[in-house]
Length: 295
Length: 314
Image (cartoon, rainbow over all chains, first blue to last red; front, side, top):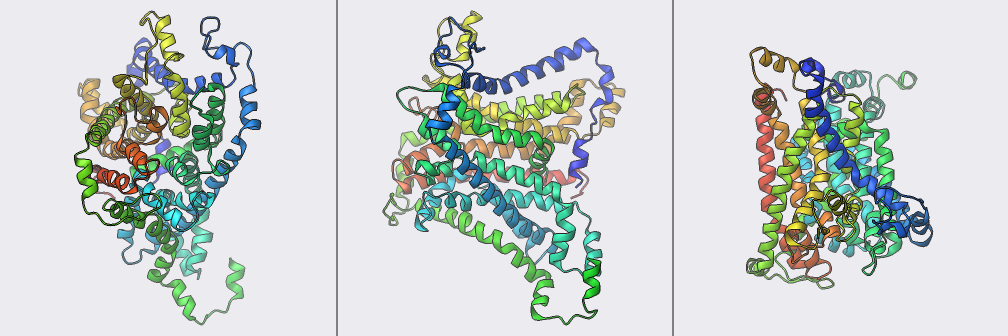
């Protein structure tokens, strides 16, 4: 399990000298550019719509829809100062950070227990954790709604902070188990011989070595909480507690007239934090995604 | 650390708590406690509660009484339910096949030596990173019945004469939601398979080329067999997420037109939350479990195969 290192190794250049340039242009570069265009176009369309004045938005005869003549900040202005958008943004940050923190702490202990302490039945617990990861929110939201209502946290941010770890903990534990496995056991044995307690081993030996794993798990948990929708939609009623995805969909979409500019601005700004986070930690993100699959 | 060790007496009396602290099994259980409490209380218990709810006539604000299989009998005779099952299977099958085909293709493209390779790899994953609901809203605008940019482009190219009614027509709506789902799913499949491709040693390809294998033969007899275990896992995840999809449909069509894009998850939500029939909604959710179990078993056997393919190493 030397994940991070061997994933980055590039074996690809081996036989590329066999392909001539024109051939590669047709078989590789062209399809790749088409893929990139299709995958990125919706973002461009989001961005261009968000800064388009309303009169250009639906007038395709006089203005090319692909470009904007007089960009405006009206939609973003409207979003930030005349709707509850800033508070949704704050809620999403608050909930995601809290849920990620809880999940990480819980998962570190669980992963250490399963992977290193190897208590009786730890193998079965490991399997159960993996199975828990496969339970989709779509079959849990109804009973969870009753549970949330029953313990009196319906329509609070606390409900989401407590519920999100149900899908974050299994994932983060599974990821950290893989990471802990890649750290040589001898290091811990040395510490044990030197008289360190299990707690000291965890805090002073294992965790400092697992920082990349913790970053991967943290970023992934944050993104998953940020993107969560069905629980937030079901458990939150009042506007001031909504998250960005729910708020944009339930409050900015009105049945009579669609304000596409404001909607796209909302979608864009709501995506930016995760995109920025992702762009700083691409490799961590990729390794956590593929790591979960490769285990 | 060295100082701390020096300061302490050489022979420490082992107190009761120190014994607990060092015992592997007890400490293991103590460390498992937070995770176990979370998962038992917010995952296992709700799962059981959901199955129980499926056997009751619970409504919002009223705890239900046990009514046996009545919910399931009701669903069995409900033509809408069967339409929704059909939609879900169609949606999952078509979307998964497309995601696999296009994802594998993209992975193979990205596995070649390219300029700006890491940039391409980073950019390709973006659709998967942003919140589904927000990208679905962008697709809603792209699929607008009057001002769709796709319609505009096709009219400009002279391929069609009137805007396409993307979400208002049965076949178009199905194709549109599948397209949006595939758009979001390709990066996950491609990047995961790329990680698998990079573990295949190029010397295998070189040896095969020397033996006169064509590029198709190399793909068919080297790449594909070595990639099978990862394909099995990736596609299981993909099928699981697609089968239980909710967000995309909820944003784009809410199940319309004529319920042609209603999936099991959206029907379950509609019956349970706005409709108030918690029992019936839970029964629909429980009806998804057999499908999910078969997907998980598929994954299990996929993982089993992996061990001998990699020479028994764990």
